[in-house]
Image (cartoon, rainbow, N blue to C red; front, side, top):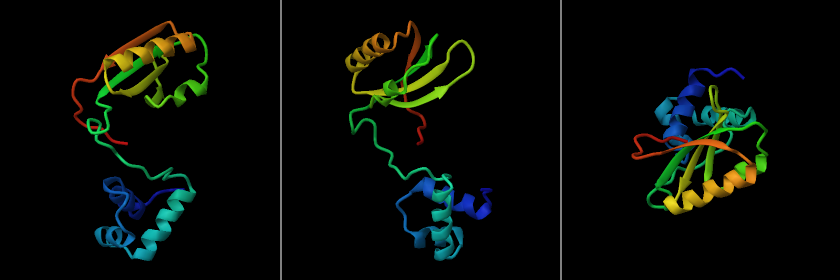
Length: 140
């Protein structure tokens, strides 16, 4: 499916607030509500929109300790290991490392316990971890 300007306008509004009504999106994009509704349905059907979700305040939900972990591994890591709720995002990367994980925790102790268990469970020998000191911008 090729996206046009109407689709991009609708997507931009949904990124701002996916809970806004079809009518509100229609007003802001200067499209008819029926057009907005049909296009959103089509975007979902074609997996352009994979899901609607929410963005939480990290501090308010006790996940203000954010870390990024680079992983180098000789073997494939089983997908079940990525289902851990602390692992928020996983990317394959180029260079010295194979994967980049975005992780969220309550505190350093919870993070340390995760790292030890993750290394033991997966057999990974080499990681590099970076702890976020300030959250400047975070999107879903």
